[in-house]
Length: 346
Image (cartoon, rainbow, N blue to C red; front, top):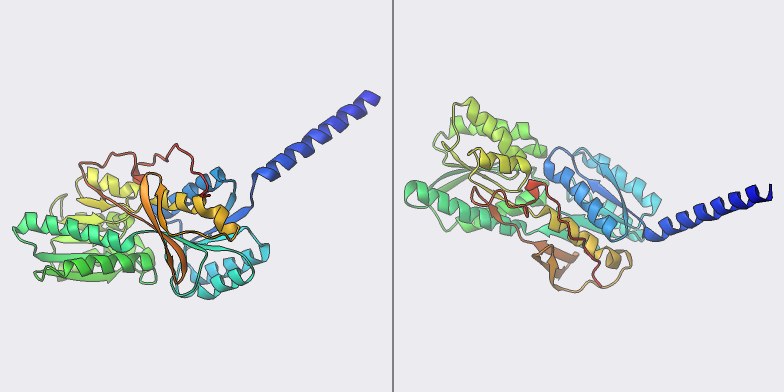
């Protein structure tokens, strides 16, 4: 009987020890509010953030707003009551979420803006792609394609934006159009696909092909919109190469369209690096420590931290993907996550 009691006590002590060790390994729970899981970038961001945050000691839980602003506002209110270590927010609507961000920070909960920059109120950290720079890269690609077709940089471009409440698409538009101003022979027709719905993009392409049959280049701001654009072109009897096309996030479907000849260029949004940057700085974010401006190596890319009016902001560059480099495993669309673990910035 005495041996049984001793054995039970040993099991209990071992169990408590394991629980203590597990608790010590976790630095806290971080909530990620993803705007939607309809496209591969958003679903990929969940797994990437979870992987990198685990490497730096944090548990992550995700809530999906299904592209509904009121749902995301309600989620923010619920999470504030739970007092997590931090909140990562990819806002459905950057204006509507401002009061929720302010309420979380007033409750002492750090807020990180991921992918969708919010400049109207301070946050504790922002990790974004260089979206205006993505627009510049896209403009360079458009310049080369139009010149190759016409012998000069001229023609008509259909730009299919995402939702106009998302600064990601607005910044790409800004960067693209400001660089294309150098070419007065280029006409740009810009139409938003509300709620980033692929079906909306397909309708836009169908309608614009009737209204503007002389379109040379179609530029949807996400690969999943390009899929719908291709479907509309096929319905109109077009074949790969009949109309030039490029996109701007580097999703697997975009890379597949390059391989099939429909897409000339995909300007990558560096998903893995954006997520890794959040994990690298999470200790400082949670500890409310100073984040210094400067250059940081993020998975081999040069991330630049600046201190803005809205807080520390890291920008990470994208790159143009073409048929020449489409199989490079460094691009997140090839679904080969980095094997090297990230480390917290000291």
